[in-house]
Amino acid sequence: MEYTLKKSLGQHFLHDETVCKRIVESLEADHKKVLEIGPGGGAITKYLIERPFEQYECIELDKEKIDYLLKKYPALKDRIIHDDFLDAEKPFEGNFSIIGNFPYNISTQIIFKILEWKEDVDEVVGMFQKEVAQRIAASHGSKTYGILSVLAQCYYDIEYLFDVPATSFTPPPKVVSGVLRMVRNNHPYPIADYNKFKGFVKTAFNHRRKTLRNGLKSNFPADKLTDDIFNKRAEQLSVSELVSLYNSLYQ
Image (cartoon, rainbow, N blue to C red; front, side, top):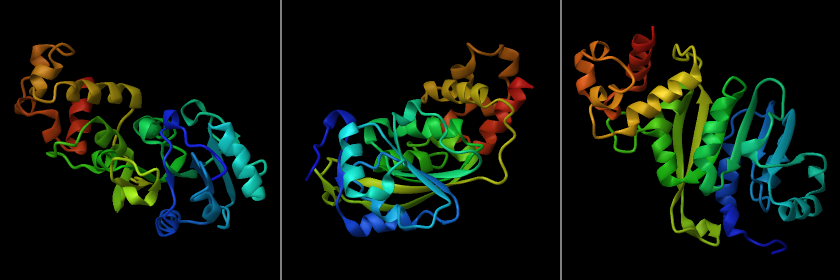
């Protein structure tokens, strides 16, 4: 191996070629712009650069990996952005897709960043720690359903594709991984102010064991919290119900 693994960057490199190909094949359309997050040693990059995308770029924080990738895959010249994805500017104008074996230590933050770009990102294929992937895809009533589930599902249809065992990586992580596909919802919920809605959802889920009435009482007057729905907990409400509740409270 011509590069070192950095625990501080959450690096575990995928060596199972069958899994690499499955991840790349899960990205649906060829004729589009694609950003890969964290190419690392090029596990899926080598398959991505073979596809006839309109444009392909990747973003990598680790300079050592960039040097390795440029040496190993000359086709990546001028296609690598040396930056932290969480601080990066949008790489393309118009719609584009995102793919990656996301670093587990920032995978939740990656989703929140993608949601900031939701008008432009029409598809995401990503590998996460399995419990994070399950949280994003969770349905209401589930213990794993929460802020990430609601915000992602407001804008994307989410499909849990497959598990990836620890033995597929070097070094093997202590967790099972999971691959998700997120496709932008063509019938978005009526949310006029995403940041305001995000704050509402965070407040609703901050006290998971409390009823919505108790969880929201410091934010709204009591006469706004009289409906029976406020006897429920946030995790009992579907995405649609939470959006409706938000709109009724802020109208």
